[in-house]
Length: 93
Image (cartoon, rainbow, N blue to C red; front, side, top):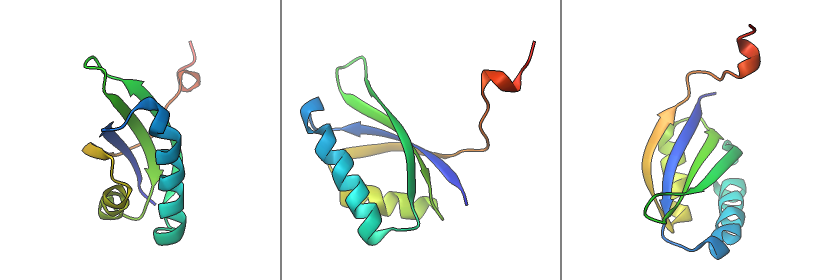
């Protein structure tokens, strides 16, 4: 199944992010059980806005976008299909 990296910008404060995470899990469980949320990196951009880079496994980009639309409180800047993963251990000296 394809894996996606979702670049998002939120319109809520840091204190509201736990509720966003709970809502994301609930929406996936109830409406999109095919989606697996692997992990996210939450960052503050140069303008002070909260962003996240989320890795999801899902049947299609359209399903990821449908989930994001129901989640609300953010804008999806870009969705990338992940072609593979590497770590430093993959490149021995």
